[in-house]
Amino acid sequence: MSETVQLREVGPRDGLQMTATILSTEQKLEWCRREVAAGLVDIEVTSFVSPKLAPQFADAADVARRAILIEGCRPAALVPNLKGAQLALEAGLTSLYFVMSASEAHNRANVRRTTEESLDEFRRIIEHRDTMPGKKAWIGSGIATAFGCTIQGEVPERRVVEIAARLAEAGADGINVADTVGYGDPAQVRRLVKAVMDEVAPLPVACHFHDTRGLGLANILAAVDVGVRSFDASLAGIGGCPFAPSASGNVDTEGTAFLLERLGLDTGIDLEALMALRQEVERWLPGEQFARGVGVAGLPRR
Amino acid sequence: MSETVQLREVGPRDGLQMTATILSTEQKLEWCRREVAAGLVDIEVTSFVSPKLAPQFADAADVARRAILIEGCRPAALVPNLKGAQLALEAGLTSLYFVMSASEAHNRANVRRTTEESLDEFRRIIEHRDTMPGKKAWIGSGIATAFGCTIQGEVPERRVVEIAARLAEAGADGINVADTVGYGDPAQVRRLVKAVMDEVAPLPVACHFHDTRGLGLANILAAVDVGVRSFDASLAGIGGCPFAPSASGNVDTEGTAFLLERLGLDTGIDLEALMALRQEVERWLPGEQFARGVGVAGLPRR
Figure 1 (cartoon, rainbow over the protein chains, first blue to last red):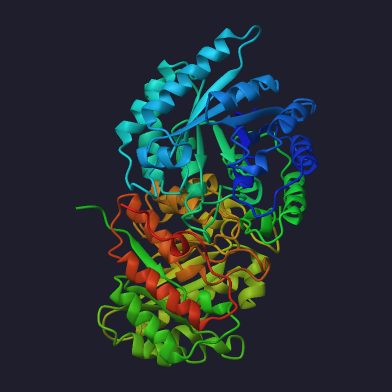
Figure 2: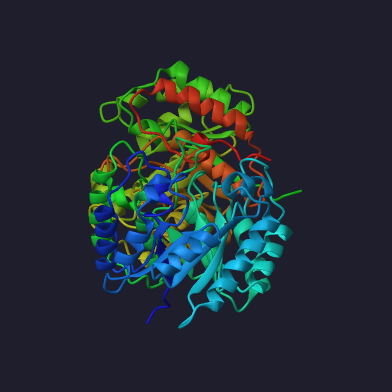
């Protein structure tokens, strides 16, 4: 039996942040259902942000409530603040990812808070969760711009490690180190991700890469090498970076699954089914740019 | 001082095999001149194949003779047979790459010979070179479809190692392990390239990857990990695979240089100058598909 690896689909959240077309609630749920049928069960189904800022997620509560009912699905949501966490928990979700940036400049631009204020907000989210009856929801935190920032440039690695430590101390159930703008490289991944893992052990550390500069899958390989076994990806690489409009977006789920399987890890995914779904989702999003790679070229002949 | 790595530009040869537009001799030489000015001096400038089969290389001898005169340039050419090698040596080239396939089916399709016949032909090329007066030309051999073949499917790794051993025994000055159709993955790269290196040591082993299934740069990372320090790449990823028309082509030179530099290796390349040249070459080849990655998104902000 080969070792398992978790692949989290973030297309319905990170991918749809950037698309011109807003998918219907039905389409989002169909996407989740078919992805679960293809063996990919961990899905970030939506983001509990203000509908004024992100109208594409105005149906967040509805999507969450209905995704929970999909057999086999383990839905999660992104929450930028306490209000979002409250709404996500009310909808019945048991897995949330808070997000803050290691870059002070990006955190202000993204959630209009200093990083200190974001850490305070995360503590309030954990406190709120702990007052709720029943089984505790799993609440991790992403660290955005961990490999550099389009606004402020370099982000010191010790700062990323320190934020990870403070999130862990505040009660995070897991840390997701995110290369939000595609600045990371494999040497940096091995160094920084290893440092974060050492700092927060035994908490699980996941990685979130963008393929903006073509290094997405090389970065995943580097993270696998240092022991990471949980990755985010977006079907067809949907998503992107507003600062580099014609560049590639998130690492593509099908390419990531192909790489992980070829490395001898078990994703539980039926790649042919996933690639068929990719074609369907492409039809829903006319005019978008999609990843190339295995989803276009097809699997090698055996 | 960081360790150096050789990056070989193969765009004027492998890239132009696939393009609809045939570049003029002047454009090919301008490409070489500007690439040398950007610090990339090892260039596969042409292919000595029959002009009937590949009219885009009808100017092979002229390109070779004039590329030799570019200050700082180290031009090489691809030769599929003795006739090509004779013409390349007559033109004054001192660096040639023979090519044969590990896949019997691909070798027949590509050079209309069995692999045994190709090995015999390589011996004749080495014999021919050895009869020539003066300093011996460097003659390496590529092993195409080393990671699998679109015609016959899997190619046994022991077969690739055996062909490498026989080429070395025949007098090859170096071996280039090529993933002609983009089937390779990092696990396979580490295993197979390491086995070839062990077999032919101390001969140098280079790698040639295509990004058809998105793993091009991950494969380069894997090869660096096992000690490879010579890579082929094509500016803007020009080139491709006739069996997967909408898929990506060769790994892009600018993305490869970006990765290698980020891994702490010294390519000697000015990335900004290389990316400016990419834009020029793109203009010469209207309607082609070019790589995304760092050549589109630009270097990270520092």
